[in-house]
Image (cartoon, rainbow, N blue to C red; front, side):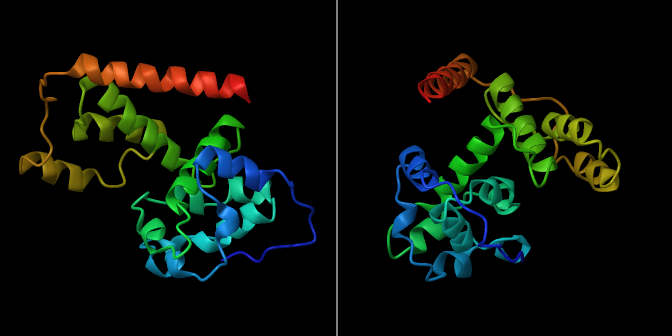
Length: 192
């Protein structure tokens, strides 16, 4: 866990910006810690979820966007459902991740965005996830080709990873969803 230097001046508009983009109020958090106590990945995070909200409240944008917590968040919404102040913490984490990518902040865990793009790329291409091709794409992007090759071979041999992607109906509709999201993101970016 990191120790925060509160001597640095924060951006006073950062909390309002996150509140607007995430459609929730980080200012409502009083750091009770229920979100962090319920988070299944909190033990791996450099800042606990309630501490990330505090970074937002203090306007410490650089610290919030560069922490590993936003990349480790699984968006399971346990934190949001436990919050007595109804702060949608999972949405704040998503917003911080998106902002970090938009602003070119290097991910604290570089393999995570590579996994996201591999996953979404396969869904966009085939209409649903094909685990084997997604895994191969992720392995190529991350450069971690052989770390769990033995496990992958066992899964293929047991039929857990299908060699060919399934043919599904509605692939064009899934692609259309991706196009609409990309258009909405462009419009939102232009409005900033």
